[in-house]
Amino acid sequence: MGEKEFDFKGLKMSGFLMLFINLVLMFLCVALLFTYNSFGVPGIILGVAGIIVSLFLLGGFMQLEPNQARAMVFFGKYKGTFKQTGFFWVNPFLDKKKLSLRARNLDVKPIKVNDKTGNPIMIGLVLVWKLKDTYKAMFEIDSQTLAEAATGTPANAATVGHTVAGRMTAFENFVKIQSDAALRQVAGQYAYDDNEGDINGLTLRSGGEEVNTQLEQKLNERLAMAGMEVVEARLNYLAYAPEIAAVMLRRQQASAIISAREKIVEGAVSMVKMALTKLSEENIVELDKDKKAAMVSNLLVVLCADEAAQPVVNTGTLNQ
Image (cartoon, rainbow, N blue to C red; front, side, top):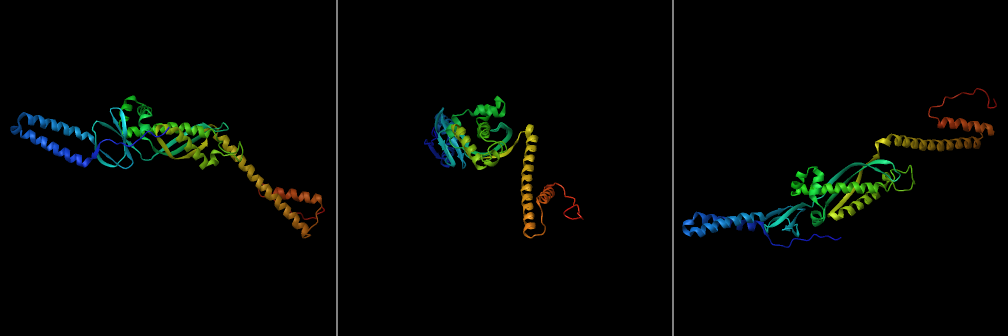
């Protein structure tokens, strides 16, 4: 579905010029009222009518700052989006719905989901989003319903939907709900880590930019219908759920201990091999198979032990 937004092409004037004309009109009308002796009843009628028209024209003034927009609606019909910055005057009958096009941050609190292997995890994200299509944002989703969901009070929903702050709060609530759904979808495609799966597979812990890119893509697919765009999305919290955190911590500690032991044994075997080779090459002492086996056993015990070995001094001969 393509963009439905288009630029406003209706009547518009410089706000300063129209303000000058309006002040002149009001001055002339007041002058007519004060000089009713000269013009009589027609002068009074014209003066009163002119003041009413002047007051009515005040409703057409509006100003826009950079990265702000106005969705122009004429008796329920969309007439385009006004994005020019400055002070302008337009048809007072137009309903000028103010919107912000500026980037906004959203910190999604961690939620509990199941990863690919079924483990419950806590995962959260932070994202930057902004409005891209004002027509879809205003008319494709029900902002007042979203505001009601955000505030929890129907009375506030009707009020909040008619202010720029209320509209943006409603849109933010829509983004938050869709972010939760996208986060659950992406988290379910990957394992938390590689302890229970393919060590070469992508995981939430090791995925980095690939997981963030996938999350951003899913979010943009969901928010396109509402005219919103995710500029950036990043995982900012990732941990096991509390009910399994202690068990998983012990598993990680066991894995770390096993990895450390493997390194220790690998180094010890290398050192024993080097010792035997040096003794043999330099003819320091001749060892038969039994002596070599005993020496290997003793060296491995010394090198692999958690505590310092207690030396035993042999005062006899090697044959004893």
